[in-house]
Length: 455
Ligand code: HEM
Image (cartoon, rainbow, N blue to C red):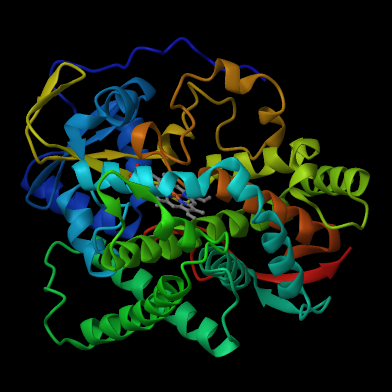
């Protein structure tokens, strides 16, 4: 598989192109709300590597070339922060957690959390991941139709809770947490789509529902933090590692630990669940890929459950996950704003303006990928990665704020895919039309209804 490497320099005209002006501003807003990935793809194809557009009353920028992305996310990363909108929407849930903190607080927290995500620590979670998957499959009956997206969400939530807190929740607690997370996600999705946000302290029905949801998760975290503080025992789970980490300014406070734990619950399961849902969908649509995956699993594992040591011998399984993340990157868009006026691609961008970055559009760019709309895991088996321009593939972001759970997620997705595909395949329910629904992450609109078939 070859890649075009001729367009390495971004094409940035003297005047930035893009749909601006009052009428375009409202058209953009409607398109943004209706189908954000589709809108961004349209902007990239129509206007190119560096686009400006009006979004309601706000001038917004969209960059679509790996070099420009590298500038914002890597080489000049310290000149940019997460956007104020992102923080305002997520703060009621995540407080000052790693996903939205900036500056010295972010630096310190990243340093304290990083050891918990080192390869050796993460490898210890492989068994939990496989065990949770085997338990989830106990109730699946061949021939039945299931909401596979729900199954994946429940499973990855279970995994993040067990690895974070070191033990399973009761079924009631699990349901309450699942519901609370769902309420939070819907709230955040709705908030990102509106220009006029009511403050979360106003006692509207939606805000009251959100408050109750946050309380459920807060109480759970408080219980586990208190247990750790009493015993001071590092049980090998993420939370004990977080709480025992020390730097020159001491340990994390309970409030900060709450924010980080909340962040890991939210950031650490929906993304992987959606990736797996898309993988099942794509496998169902591409029987030859599914057959090759089954062949690899049968050859390497037979009927035995996978372990972390098997992963290097499952390159096709890995390629399926990578290709799924290329076509449907769960974190399909992110944003930054300059903390002071900056120069980007020869243009001055004023402090505080939103700059959008969309792995979704970069991953579908024919300059970097042959047949970019086609699901071809094989493309990852050759030397594609050697030739790809840096940042032409960035499902986990890049630079200092690259996903801290990157290795965790890749291990989890491969282990779940392997464990399930050894035993079952999924067939799309008749009449299912699947398209992406851009919430905070990219998920299948209306869910993913599939029939379970025993292998
Ligand atoms: C397939 C699964 C996942 C995908 C696609 C994904 C994607 C991303 C991306 C793109 C970012 C960077 C966002 C930005 O630059 O604005 C990010 C950050 C983050 N992710 Fe993930 N993620 C996944 C799984 C996980 C898991 C399993 C965890 C934790 C257990 C996690 C925790 C985080 C955290 C805490 C951050 C913020 C890091 C920082 O700013 O320092 N993610 N993720």
